[in-house]
Image (cartoon, rainbow, N blue to C red; front, top):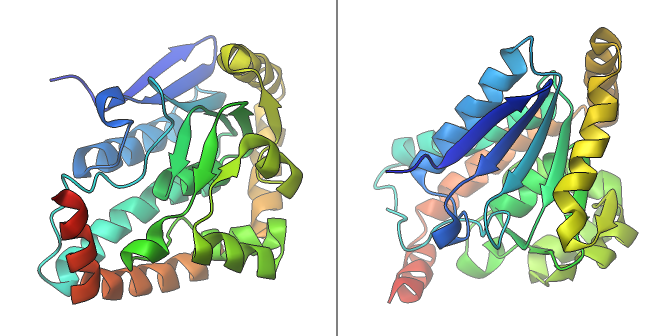
Length: 250
């Protein structure tokens, strides 16, 4: 069985790749847990100076793999599942290493959240992002209830999460959620060029810059994640959510 998340170090640049291309890198239990572990290892690794985060194949991450989802039977199971998803954001957003996102294809739900968590998200021209959670009766995670309003404004953030519209890379650039948009075939080259510039900088200053700026600008992310987790647990246990997802599986 192939690894669901790949991690490769080259000259101080660690590339972490979601590796379920046959499922558009959709999130299952193994992928989420492995991704959190790979980021934790990279953040603790003195040889890793910067991280590139991308997806194999035609998508960055298509969100939850609804065909593999097993609805938690208890609040405790739901809590454990969501905390593991939130652990990924903790490692991306509060970890020491700068994360350059190389966002290809679809970034959906949790995948869109992870793209937003990146420090410098570079989007491929053809990439698209959206939040489907409200349609399923679920709830967003990834600290986006705090991060998104700071970037796009409160009203626009409510619109994006509530209505679930699909956004192009250019629209996300205008909204401030993409840092750069490049041709599809230039995505990884651009990400590596940016990562190389960061890797060449004095690392103590780089680490402090990320830590200070994220904490000063987004001091409420941890609180947001706690509230998101509580809301998502309630959503997991809602019979309507179960019914909607069961309908998709058929």
